[in-house]
Image (cartoon, rainbow, N blue to C red; front, side):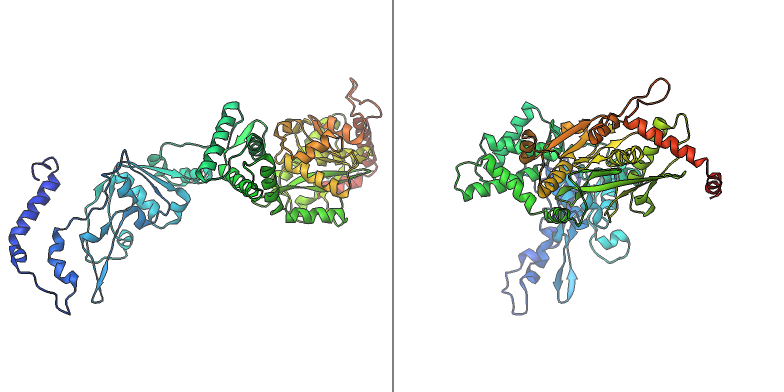
Amino acid sequence: MNEKYKDFLEVVKYIENVKNDLLENLAQFLKEPEAPTPFQFLWMKELPFRRYEVNVIVDNSELKGAPVVVELNPTYQNLFGRMEKEAQFGVLTTDFTMIRGGSLHKANGGYLVLRVEVLLQNPLSWDSLKRALTSRKVAVEEPGERLGFISIKGLKPEPIPLNVKVILIGNPLLYQMLYIYDMDFLELFKVKADFDTIMNRTEENMRKYAAFVCAFCRKENLRHLDASAVAKVVEYSSRIAEDQEKLSTRFAEIADIIREANFYATQENAKNVTADHVKKAIEEKVYRSNLIQDKIKDMIKRNFLLIDTEGEAVGQVNGLSVIGLGDFAFGRPSRVTASIGMGKEGIIDIEREARLGGPIHTKGVMILSGYLAEKYAQDKPLSLSARLVFEQSYEEIEGDSASSTELYAILSALSGLPIKQNIAVTGSVNQKGEIQAIGGVNEKIEGFYEVCKAKGLTGKQGVLIPESNVQNLMLKEEIIDAVKAGKFHIYSVKTIEEGIEILTGVEAGSRRSDRTFEEKTVNYLVNERLKEIAERLREFPEFIVERRKR
């Protein structure tokens, strides 16, 4: 043995110590075996020979390649090992045979994979892991000794050299927090890899998607999907990604739909899962979660919530928002109104004044002042008092996706031109009047469609969306069929001028060389009203002085 382990000095030294100890305790081996007495336990008889036993902490002899250990519960003892104890006559005792290794011992020479959020939740684990990686040694010790609270006579195993690569898995927010607040994080974890939740919808990726579906069905012993079902799954994947040119990599959600579709195929005793089964699985998933959506739709239908889907009104527009419930999101129409009067207050956001508007929504409203100033205040001061509000809204409002809706309401109120109530609007706007992309476009369109369907489709209803969101359209088949049949319409616009023409049926009007607008257009009427307000304010100088004092 000395010859075999001559390159390991610690082993040679240990063998020499064992040999000397055997010679010093020969009497233990020369005794005749004795039958245990009634009061003698087996462990008492074997106790003298325990010192010669071998405690194998890690056995990777059957492993091919480097060890890869995934620790799902990274407590301190699961990571660094423990010293177990046994009770003897009311006393806890231990020895080297009760030393147990942890995940770091098992992964030594290989890779250890940890969920960072779970790691940070366990006391001592994070700091002790950093200490082990810095010192390149892993020691087995009691948690109390690590904290310095307990000092008892016990074992002190020698630290083991550590050579391991630790992989932390978590969301980007935790990475940023550790990067900013933990001085050691950057030194210990130098390689970052971001994994996207979407990928390009190419022919190659769609073939890989079909291969994933096939492999998943084999793994879980499910019925295979036919071509129409695979196409439906790919379509649903793009729906989750909210992009016609992307596929979702959230495979857990895809797997749930496949399992449920397989259930319906089994009920029908079908040979394969078809597109109808996948469609039913998707619809049932929505049905189990859309109780609140149904209640809101019912309240609109019964006029508890006032939403018009026919007729015209001045200073009133149907806006669209998205309500997220975690596993389910749906679009909800909201009535946005604007009132105009004389004054210098500018645009007042009632939601902000009531502390129901978030900072992004407030920013969107303030942008409207920039648009009005550049468009109409080149030859006169911008003098108006406009108030904006989401009617029958009793929760916080956030986001700027309704800023174009609010601007349409202001332009309608200033010009006196009525807005078509059969068209709902979504989209943010910048100071130049360009309509910008928003999120949740599919849910918003479907939300207004459901309301129009409940109140009665007239063939004139529709939704106004930003042109840049056309590529995000992944609508339900029912809505696609309704659009094809002319029962519902989807309009895409680039600018406020395009949108106001659709909503009012009147030309927006361009600015002429003398800084005036074409007559009988929306911009002309707005400009004339603002001019009138500015001139009328001159008749009340005391009002202006009073406002300045305030």
